[in-house]
Image (cartoon, rainbow, N blue to C red; front, side, top):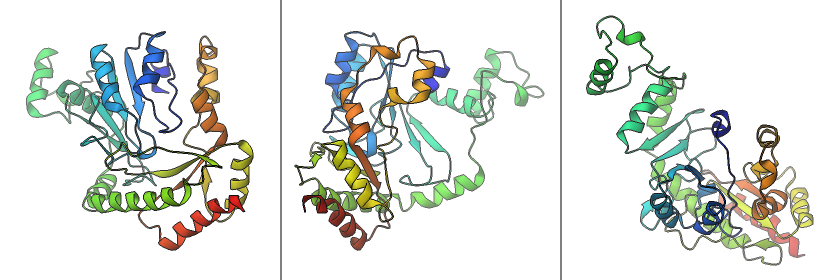
Amino acid sequence: MPLIELGLKAIPVDVELDTLNVSSTKLLEVLQKYPLKAFFLTNLLGFCDDIDEIKRICKEKNIILIEDNCESLGTVYKGKKLGNFGIAGTFSFYVGHHMSTVEGGAVCTDDDELANMLRLVRAHGWDRNLSLLEQDKIRVKHQVNSTFYSRYTFYDLGYNLRPTEVAGFLGNTQIEYLDEVIEKRNKNFLKCANGIYKYGDFFYPVRYDHIDFVSNFAVPVICKSVEIRNRLVDLCNNIVEIRPIVGGDITSQPFYKNHTKDYSGEFENPNAKLIHNQGLYFGNNPEMTNAEINTIIKIFSSLEK
């Protein structure tokens, strides 16, 4: 949505069916037709594909790589945590994520220029959250009188996206337990995956053996037909809360069709469409009990009866 709001052409990139994420192969297919300037990559549900190769391609072609790591906080791929491959990684602390401040999130970057711009943009465009050194630089550059006008000088377009002190307290309190929470999510996922993904007659396999550590947000299941998905929806009714896999195929969403009429018909994303039509997920959280996990596995395994 921000890409469209900025007047940019939002080009969708299809995902791989076995990882639910964009691969370097899918990215290269799109680059044959569209010279991308920036790539906003979502690490879906705690998974990734060959993000190291994606990073190499982006560097080689001078494409800005930004990671949406809202659902994958703590996942490790080839010794590096997701969110560290692009110029920045975004994290959500909304209810239900790995940690919660009720609303809000964070952006992590080691790029000083971007960090300063983020601090400006989140607070109306003024410099109050910059370091004293950076404040001096920007005030000298714009010839601002630091004793009178500086606190009410707006250097760029900005918003009011500052976290509240209550949100900050909630976040700082949870950080102490974050490793424990992530470890529990990993164990829950592996139990569910081992109990469900073996039913190959009903579900497409989800591959994660290339990932060092999966910090799972929710457990995805891609059914081999719409009929199987519908049966599962009925079986889970009033027992297990299930949802479509995130936003599904974004190109099928009304906002995308309405705001990209000039080019939305150009794209075919067969894997995203299949996941949209035949996929579902159920939540993972550190409070899940073995009894609850066994109930979920029992429901999904009942398809073979």
